[in-house]
Image (tube, rainbow, N blue to C red; front, side, top):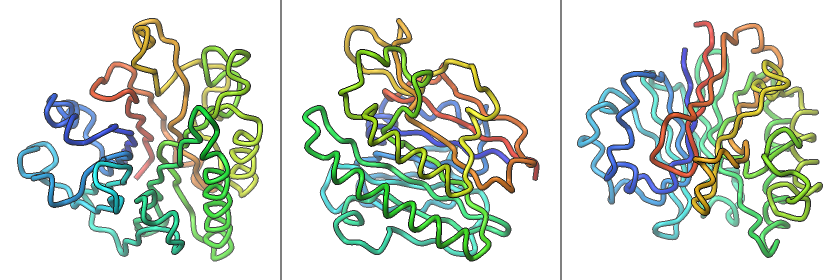
Length: 255
């Protein structure tokens, strides 16, 4: 089984650039998109031939052209639920849970704290609510795959210039502490567990040719329940796939 996550930074822009032309090659069973910036009325998915065999589950933001998550799945889930049940977060379309036999996949788009730190408190509140949600699922014996754009680089190895960014949202100590808090809920950052010393990034600013120079951040994660680790074959960061300021990441599991 292959599960791919990708912050598309606007699905309409990706479609206009033929940015899904890699789908057949990688062939994910489940595709989790973040920051879609559109809803069902604005996109005709039949024009994306490579996605025609997938079921599509949307959770767009109320505000047009903003945020939103979308999960594609070849398999029909047992159940789908949107949001955390908290209006201030749910109106921004940041959370979809798809339930399958044996585990849930949570497609999540964590808020950006912004350069002026004006949304750091909102971001931390969202982290806290996601942690409480994960705790509830684990207490019920459910295994979880939490994936998406976390908008935080966890450790110094996860961004090119850590010392210059100690006061930048996305690498603030308090934000990184909440990645720690998630991992304390019996979750594994499976990329870092599998590749403890590898330096790869999933996001690059559009400024100053950062991607060409590989001055990036690892912001896109798969956190999985510890019991699922035995099923992990590999996790791949697709730095060769363009179309967004993020690149896709694929988790490969034994069926």
